[in-house]
Image 1: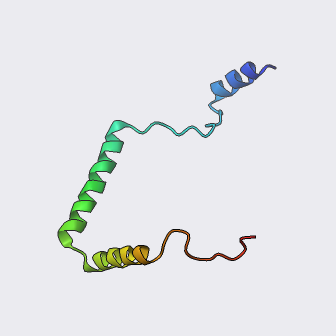
Image 2: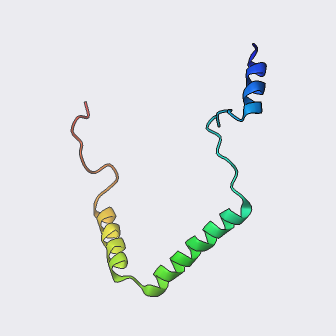
Length: 77
């Protein structure tokens, strides 16, 4: 049995592996997801969530005072 025969046999039975290739998402589902994300962003902006705003500001301040690579520097050689 050749590889082509094997694939043909499995294709007939519907038992082919997906080979890690993601299936295409329909345009409608994709646009719905984008619309939901935009709506959630708008709601967050409209609500002016004080906790989220404070958390974002704290994170920004932390990033300003700690340069990239700051942290656990042990086991470096």
